[in-house]
Length: 146
Image 1: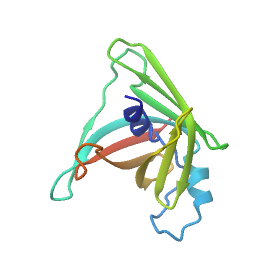
Image 2: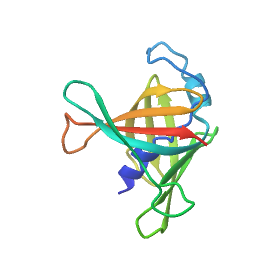
Image 3: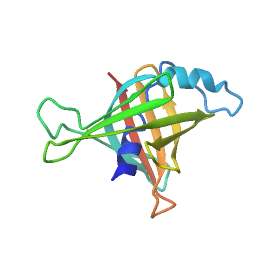
Image 4: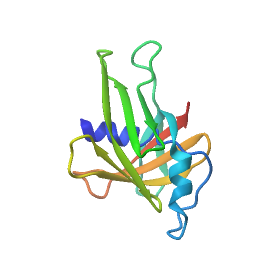
């Protein structure tokens, strides 16, 4: 469950401008642009023909976004997620960005989870994450900046 929150949250992973995926990019720009609060709006997967299949996420609890992620300039993050029972779950930790890879460590965890930043603009963050059980399946999470 904690890993799914991190992925979902992955951030909501806030970015202030478009970054390319080139490995020679300056990571400080991506880190600066991710700072902020993000709301997960779509989830899906990459199909065999490399087409994205995405569905919109609706609110489970009135007036509450399903998952929000906030990235802070000091390299920390906070996620807020509401389950079907409308109970809020909060997760905190640290993050780093190297090239187009975002890695997050939940507070107290020794190993982190990494996702690929596929698209980052001032209003949208799209990440790809490999399924831990089905290594060839790619999950997609889309966030919009709040």
